[in-house]
Amino acid sequence: MRAKRRVLILGAAGRDFHVFNTCYRDDPQVEVVAFTATQIPGIAQRRYPSVLAGAHYPDGIAIEPEAALERLCRDAGIDEVVFAYSDITHDAVMHLASRALAVGADFKLCGPRATMLGARVPVLGVSAVRTGCGKSQVARHVAQLCAAHARRVAVVRHPMPYGELAAARIQRFARRADLDAAQVTIEEREEFEPHLAAGQVVYAGVDYQAVTCAAESEADVIVWDGGNNDFPFLRPDLHIVVVDALRPEQLASHHPGEAVVRMADVCVINKVDSARPDAVATLRERLAELAPRATIVLAASPVTLDDALAIKDRRVVVVEDGPTSTHGGMAYGAGTLAARAAGAREIVDPRPYAVGTLRHAYRDYPHLGAIVPALGYDRAAVSDLAATLARVPAEVVVVGTPIDLAALVGGNKPCVRARYGYADAGTPTLAAILERRFFARAAG
Picture 1 (tube, rainbow, N blue to C red):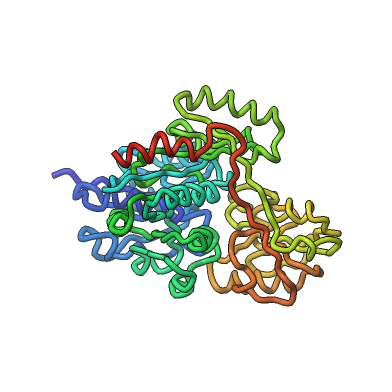
Picture 2: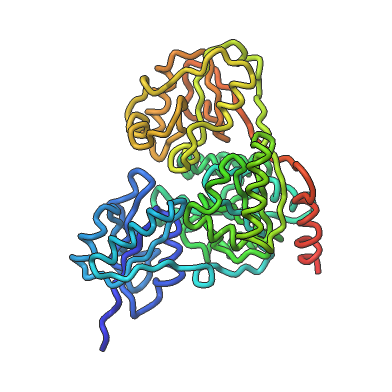
């Protein structure tokens, strides 16, 4: 009798668990020996619990640091290394492949056919080619268009299960109080809060078959709100992919962003209001090569301040969206642009005043400029964020992350929120495309 094939899954607490659930959990010919973890602080040295892992794994599955890849392969006799996370350069993926091959293992990527789940209601998928393209505001706009067509909407968000995994099997959020009760991280709030403020119910979790069943029970339409530059976990009836006009050179530089754009039904070229016309033209040309069947939409990403006068001629410190500014590679974001436009006297460099996890973040992400990334994967990190902001010699905090940061960290400085939205910047519009290619078909 042939021995089980021994598998190691490389992940970051998201797609890795979904790949296991869809491709390996119930296969008696496979033993998943461990997951590895990267990108997110503090997620290694946990276990994927037996209640999620299933009958073949009564003790659960270990989660180890990615740095241990070779040791794990040698010690456990790994036959197959599976790559299962997102927003990583093509070079970096192949370096991981080389490490796996060098110790004798196969290297594998699990694709859409193996991992996409079906739903009983129509699905609109929203993805992006990189973190920070403006996918979140596009997803909110799409959800609002669905609601305007009298559709009951459930937003299903790409997973971010950074806490206790068994408790996060199915997550449903309808009010801000639900986020408080679940003790979600700042990174999760950045994605969930704006949808809740717009009146949408948000689902997330670990077991996406169960998540999908729960979401479709109360919705006419599911909007898949993707994470990083990943492709959807649910099979979309229409797949919208957002690209960044400020970073045309990154259209096909990262995995799985290139695959995502090649899959697109609609490509939204975002931020055309602040991009050079030649960059937009370059993207149009490249999209004609990579995604010739996709319809191209031009969009703006306008930023508004709750109180611009509170910033004028003041010394400010700017807080930007965490993942966008760290592994998304952005030195600054919407908050910085809004502060400059409002006439801030000075944007104070917070780096000399950073404490704890933020000091480590500036070391680990040297591209960061004079901003505070909104990192808060645990309570200690939230405390470090509050302490750093208190130490910076500024008069006002400009909050470029899409959450009510003041309610979380308090502090000795007034906070002014910079809110970024979606605006059409040409024809066809997303509304017109959905009317023609989704709502009419869904009604039929």
